[in-house]
Image (cartoon, rainbow, N blue to C red):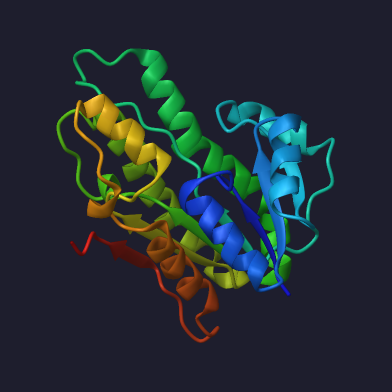
Length: 229
């Protein structure tokens, strides 16, 4: 049984991955923004451990974790949480840039830094659930795509730095997936939402688990997942 720390486990891809791992009897460590959300996650995933830390304020994560018990050995760190706010670069305010960069890029970097000792002990695995926007930037997606392009660079650098410690690193690039975030995106775009058009979160979760379960003689570095309909 391995230990896995997941961000974004309250809904969408993160909740699906957490459910699949729990069904296998794995030990879950779930990051929550506050104590109330942590209690909700423990109720949803009996036996799970929780950590409280706000990804929107990555500079405070070290202090927050200093007052909580961290896993001694960590088999995987799964960065799945994310936020998106669309808008033209000529109109998007600084606050929108800062929030997306903090949650989507700086917080994953800081979380990884803080948990690397535990990952190295277990020769663990860091998975970044990125986005198709981390490969191509379209109009109105500038800030979000910038955060995800940065996340790709973070993963690529981390992979080279940690190879000697036995830590594997994978980036997963899902296309549009049927989650609450996608509902929000459609609202921002002024479009009607039809979940049947998009990837099921179970399919993305299968990609994540495939990377985790690969024998130690190999490493999946990048997975692109696109809607099949």
